[in-house]
Length: 406
Ligand SMILES: [Zn+2]
Image (tube, rainbow, N blue to C red; front, side):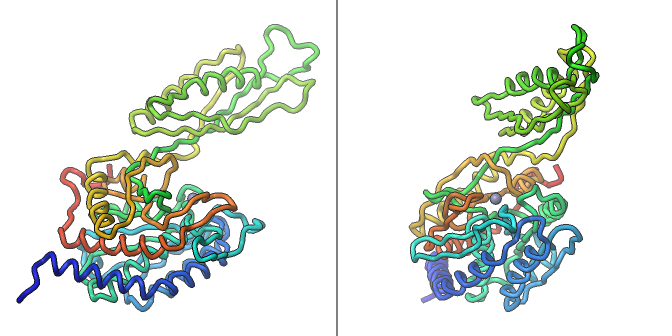
């Protein structure tokens, strides 16, 4: 008697689970090698070495491999199945190869106590890259990979804002139908359906220098003007709308006996909605344009931004599918709105359905306490493999009206 489609998919999922299970130790060994290779964003040699480990591990899959050479930063690695090479809209998996830990960081070991694994980048996000790669291996082991239009993009400089790979993400967004990101999952199995956006600014104030002892009422102190502006800027915080404005660095002047003729501040802003991004930028420009201290002048320079990953209907629909797969596997899964930015922001802004945070579960990333829940490496790999299979089975298409390049 022929099997019904549901029995078929159940059998396939069991085979995928067995395939992932067989490779669990191999995954941990690759993760160990990746973690022991230091790869701060500006250390090209180290980041390239991590990329080489991924490329070597992917070799047996016979994918089309492209290395996007970079001079200053590490190279980006792009892998595509033959079905994606043929031009069909692909499911895009993504993760980064760099970490935030500098070369002189004392946090350089890989410690596996059987329950947790500690090391720089175990969850942020070398563990996530291993999940993505081994989801492909599990699909290949079951003879399913070649038919699925799928791409894996590993970039080299996410932790410093993806200065060179953002264009690559935009380009891939146009060729894709959905995207799965492998930043770490939350401790209760959270995956990310939305992220705040971010904009950075540098505010420079100029005044008129003079001897402090002889300064009169017309004293044009750049520091005094900056102080006024800092208070106005901090006043733009709006917890209800999720708007954050933080003056994180200030400087200026040359000595206590001199009226300062220059001062500066570095500002970080976060927002949930693009409207709020524009409105906040306008308010900041307005503050800079109206000095309180006569004789001073302020100029504003944008130092980089990422649009918010809004919790769109498409993201929610994609999350629903992943949640159903997680339920089938009896794995925890919940939707989370995360404050930090990632490359998911770029993809979502380009009109793609994105769910991020599909990597292994853990906590304390960006600190020397960073750890991964050991079992979640295989669990999240299986979840990724079944979610990819489901997207393919359902013939997931890009939501109407979302054509990219927004
Ligand atoms: Zn990070």
